Length: 245
Length: 245
Image (cartoon, rainbow over all chains, first blue to last red; front, side, top):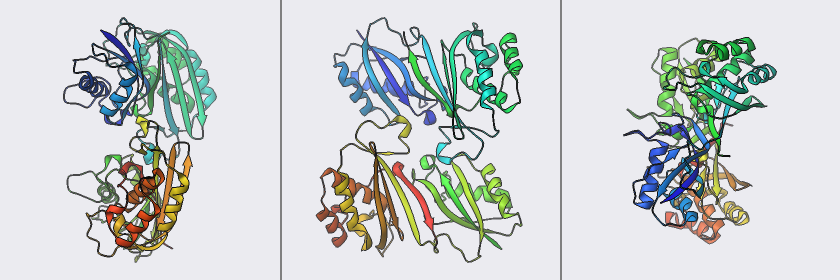
């Protein structure tokens, strides 16, 4: 048996998210179908984690196992020919049989892009979130610092989750402004359901003066969702990078 | 009765084109619905022309008439609030009652963007066409010159048309290269069905060495579609500008 690691880019706009669901167009479903066509074996694709409907990926990672002896360097071309244009395989690597894209994951980086004020272009509406209020970058940067490190992030997680351990570690948050656009990059050990979208919503509310650093501390200390900001829309979110060492 | 000129931007990816069709999501249909909600009158929106399914607009123009006394400067905000995010009204002007967006149109400019070679990003697949062969910019520029002026463009029109007069005037074609991307801009008095997509397909085939300037002349002289190149995909096409004087 051989094991392959795929690095994958997708436009999430026309998928019901990553995870395979009967009768729905999903990223996992489309890639499994392409692999099965290529290899004529039944194959399961393990992603580093799910992404929601409308969320994009610049570097999602997944792995699958197969018997087929096709040379590793041919797989990328074959799969890209079989896949729809809104999924592209960026890289294929043959890896140790024990590698598992989810269990072995050490760090993930998400990017969130949002236009603050003005009028969002019709052509950006699936790729850029919108926030109608002006914000203070320094206030957001200060609040972001409070989130760095190991914390109980229950206050930054959607209620709709099965998770029982809410401890996660955030290694870094950067916020860059270019014109009316802000790009947030959040790197962590792993993320709870909607965690990045709630973090960005919270930081924007701090930037706008609706919330303060005290509220952010309260959300961390109490684990109560009500102290954090709103969940930002899916279209601004990109899974940028998944790291394994 | 008052007459209004709208300048409109849209992401064509999720529309069945401009023209209203029962049971289908179209740009004209969505805007007429928003206007009718605003004014509570039955309103017809006249576009400068149709765009096909998947074609975008940076500056489509249309007009509509209504009795409603709402101040002109409020209309843009009201309509953008009512419209889906993939249509944005850029400008609203109250114009003479005789203005008609189609009949009064003097010049249109289309932009066509295509990536030549390499791998197109999943995130570009609805906004950038793809051409797998390398092309020579000088050859394309030379061939483009043959199309400038008044010609019978029957050879550059899809068979699927009701038009009987194929004479059109092209004022300018510019081709710019940035990295692997080529942007074609074609300005003319008016365009036949699929004309810009066929012109770009023809110029790319010339650039790649599959067609020559002789073929382009033959397509112009004989009006036979077979001498021109293929019709490029809709996603690379943008209606950039519609001019009235």
